[in-house]
Amino acid sequence: MGLKRQVIIVGGCIAAKEAANAIRNTDFSYDITIISSEEYLPYYRPMLSRAIGNDLAKSRLYLVPESWYKERNINLVLGTKISKVLPEENKVIADNGDEYSYTDLIIATGASNFIPVPRATDIGGVLSIRDYDDVVELRSILPNVKNAVVVGSGLLGIEAAWELQEQGINVSIIEFAPHILPKQLDEEASQFFSEHMAEHGATIACSSSIESIIGEEKVTGVRCSSGEEYPCDLLLFSTGIRPNIDLVKDTDIETDRGIIVDDYMRTNIPNIYAAGDVAQNKYNTSGIWVPAMEMGKIAGNSLVGKEKEYKPAFTSTMLTAYDVKIFSIGEISNEANITSKTLIDPKKKFFKKVFAKDDLLVGAILIGDISQGTRLAKNLGKITLEKAMELIE
Image (cartoon, rainbow, N blue to C red; front, side, top):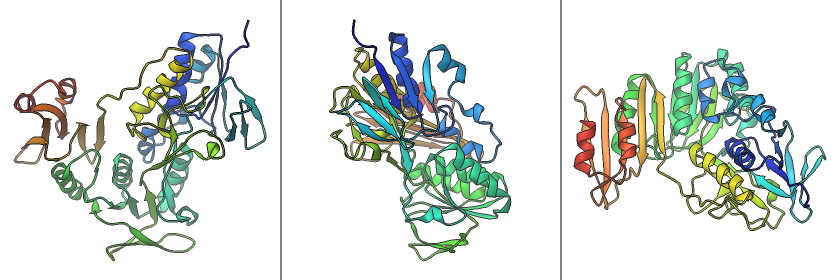
């Protein structure tokens, strides 16, 4: 009889939880331990922006209650940061010196926010939201904030800007790209939404970046590459992520931007897997919730021999901010091989646009009226551009 399999999962993200669940659904004999640097159970990070203006208890964010892990005999070690992996010894070492041996290892350490200005967060009032503690810190200073600058207009940046405005704070948004929500909207849709945001009091500066922060001990404003200056008591960065790969840098585990994995989430070390934002594959899906969830499932199943190739599906985005709903899915570029048609309400109550390649629907953007989002998603690659227009009219 062989030794009992000891599975260590480093990280407390959705990929970690899904990996553990996939293993347990196949075999109850494995010892499974999730080790997270945070003090909290794995939680739904996309809701963090919503917690800015709402006093959400941690338990409201948890993916599943603690009882879920106990029922599945999944051991949780919280508040413990793993800083080193020793593949040749099949063990990981924590900052506090604790060692954990494994027969199989899944690395799901996620990513950290990228701050383009060195040591920016050493200045009072300069923050970036990545975990629950960041939200707690932000909420503690909100009563003294009158003006805020949000750097980055991705999903979290737009959500954060709106939550701040809901608290009566004047908000300016600085975006390096030519238009806001560059991954979810094309230029035409972005222009429509930008005008809507401006009507709700937002100041937007695109094709711009932070050149310097004004204030030494506490931020009082920012100076942009355009020469414009914006006063602020709060500077919030939402400018992308960097995979947390430091713990494997001195090992033989292959890395690039993230930990390199194959279609089964296997690294170049036979008994080590990676999943979620820390993993890098040919699809470059880092930073998106649904792919991270799927990667966790694939890693867990691969570990127990139920290999299933990772194939990302079209991922959709839904956002509610500035009193309007946005739905975006698929390919939304304006490349030469993609055609599109737009429908805009004369009173600017809604914006609808569909995209096709070889006359088959490949993407869509809906702003205001998103009622046909599900039907469009189900028909990607199946219906013509004209049929798609019939759906949204």
